Length: 566
Image (tube, rainbow, N blue to C red; front, side, top):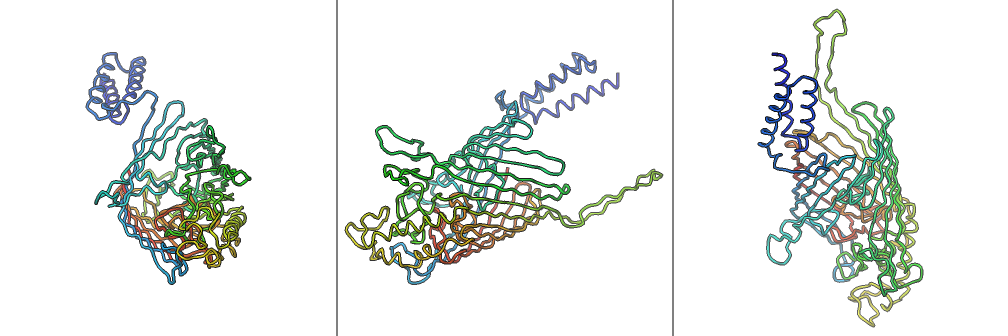
């Protein structure tokens, strides 16, 4: 009887201890366990009832009892992060850059950015029954997809401490299904399903559409494959391909990605991981390109207005071919996705250095004491990482830029028929502020596009670096150093990371960062970057980024972050 009482006490203790961290529907499982113990004779009906009553009493005193979940939810997790940042950016322009007055600068100038910012992301994810799962996340500053940062004091004209950017918007909403142990299907606005780097994808971007993933382990080798079909931009900005009573026709623009890769585990601390991805597009050719001037393929993608020479970012070397939202404009927008077929090959090699911790146990079968000795030593996680990308249609992209300039120069000194050129005066033979068309075409930035752009580095991008340490628990350190180079025609300019190199192409330079975990989940980071053009004859175009100038000769960045992950 004494043994039985001990068993009853242990069962009650385990059930009660489990309650505070278990959703309400888990009590049904506890009841089934008690019924099984009754049937086996371990507990009597009265003992089971007493345990159930104690279970309910303990549960009613917890915060979990105040939350009611739908019966379809198996588990749920709340998570997020809050980042505070001080940031300083500086970019120097060359002489000849087109200023905000529409004239060429006679000497170099610079643009500085000095600000305090924050970013908040908050989400919920969980598993459903029958291997389904879901996720929903919101982030600040919905007006800019590649940042989420809110600038302190950003004024909306109503006075200090402006709140114009202090808005939350859904940036992830998806459903998925683990069809088998190896196959996962996901649909919606999802976390990036590809193994990639910031050289190609900004981690604030969440592609919308469908993704299929395969992952299987064969001994020491894990093989994975991913395919994605994403709605890059809805036709006409709202999905209408042809409106009633309209002769205009539009295309939905899609992005497709296919990836295969592997991870080889040498041991529990050492592995190599690599992959190859291909990104292509459809719907980028509009009716304007096939002789019908009634419509364009996509509108309102970042900007439907071609660059105007009267704005600060109006370097004439911004020609990079027709933009999908303004395909007929001679002054083409820098966010064009024409002629892109990008191969990406990210990789990493992870290992540890240092003596580590070792345990020695006596192997002598006569040694009844089984003597054990331990030696402690330092151990540092290391990671060598990199990425290489090449646009197989870089030559065609460069040719489209030349064609855009030739179309512009063919208008001679008259502005008539020059679509999308701002700052012009009707009937005038100059492009505003006394700068003639001929002068623009003869300028160094124009000639840079005409005379270059087909070199290997103009169509390629690469990243190589090393990382020491890892942020997992209180007291951990992490240091990272890498070099990155992005050619003018190499990648999709709408996807690349905005935090480091201003989301600009034709920039290359070094990045160094040091991070420290002050507590579990609370860390700080210091980061510095310096960059220069890959090709000095070309500009450094960006899509409405932090520094508005697009012809940077020297670029510097300093960031100091405080991050709380929860």
